[in-house]
Image (tube, rainbow, N blue to C red):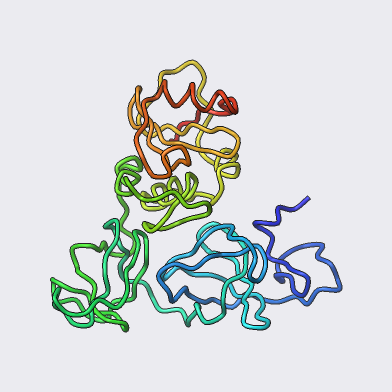
Length: 272
């Protein structure tokens, strides 16, 4: 059975490349579009529950729009869902991405000018000019020190995840305003050039290799049903968790014992 989260089809349309699709559905070629608001919920149905989020500048394939709701597939991880049609715009070439935990888009190249938008880590922008202090985009000016050029990656996923320390826990969240366990792992790995699914069960299937018997190493991933954490050191993990309702460090043994009281560890995996 196909995974609803990753299948670009609804009750009206299906992506043209899918084999053996329901012949009653209209076959469509996804139209490239771009997220044009800081953070947008990707919903299971129009107005329904949030499954994940997409952020400023991310690319999606538009499959269908009806009654103000667009059905899309995210380029980053293949996740499908619904978002408001007005949150999308034409695609512009990305020149930089936000490598600070968060930044602002200012009305002028001046930190005392009004801020127009707050952008989360990982947001992608299309620069028009760069004076060394600010990168100008169509919507305003972004501090250059908060950006890296498109295609440049960071090196340590754990250090990236630590940028989110204190971020409030949000189920399905993918931004500095709120993030969940799998959103944190995805943000960290994508920033380091590693493709990464959106949910922890998909991450467990796709990422790394199983480790048995070896001591914990920095950068390892620990999985439980419905949860994932990064190993910071042999005696500490880093994760977005509902226990503290935040992104936080937790002593390894405390976490293992606390979570084991509800569900057993299902995998210890290592990248590379």
